Image (cartoon, rainbow, N blue to C red; front, top):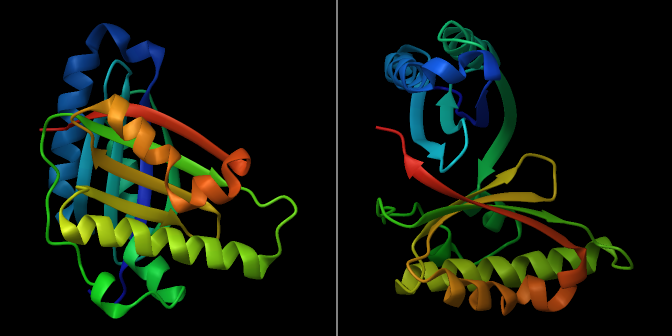
Length: 204
């Protein structure tokens, strides 16, 4: 594709569909499988315990995204929120992180114990330069851990926003909780980070 745009989609099944929720989820999965003419779906998850689906999609244009979401709406009563994103590797390259850490991720998420973390970073009492230094240190730590194999995860940054979408295997959630508290960015500005976590499953 000449142009490559990434989007994060949060698809919420509305109460009108609740009696037929499994059938609607199946229709959503089918609609996403049929979307290859306009782009390709990189990841698709259901949120554990909720009537929601998360999709990471690569498209050729905003019009192509609109066609995909129109097909999704034909599957039932849905609320669809779309967010343009970039890969975390692109974000790290923008921060001048070493090239040996910012290549394409060759690992895969395992189907068990996947968690979605939404991290919003504020920077009260920090200059932009200080924030960029913190972001760079965090990117080097995360990508270094992933390269060593100690972390299995994929991440994206919201375009133009201080927000990250992280999908990670956490076989022992209590230990991961401790690991998160010890990351450079939490150590530096923990009180300015708003985090949300959800369990997710592959949609298949």
